[in-house]
Structure formats: structure tokens, C-alpha cells
Length: 62
Image (cartoon, rainbow, N blue to C red; front, side, top):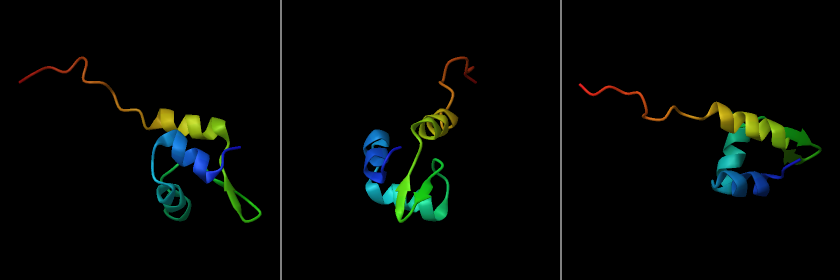
């Protein structure tokens, strides 16, 4: 399981962003273990996959 610091490092976001995801939602599934936040690495990968945007390939110009 990943700690908030590991999540922030892995996603290259500020640690505060991870805590905002926890309080406001919108990020990967986070789990409270006692007083500590954790994320399963698989859940983090699934969330990142869901954030993928299509490349510009296949666009037609007007």
C-alpha cells in the first residue's frame, strides 16, 4: 500500500493535492487505516489509466 508521500511522488503532484483528493474526492481510491491514508497500488494505476486522454491522432483539420 502506498503512503500519501509515495502517491504524491509517483503522480508528481504536491502532497497537499493528495490530501485534497482525500477530503474533496476526485483522486484515486484512498483508504483510511487507523489515522493514516493509504492507497492500493492497483487502485492508483486504475485511476491513472482512467485519466488518460486520447492523443491528437486521427483528428481532422477544418
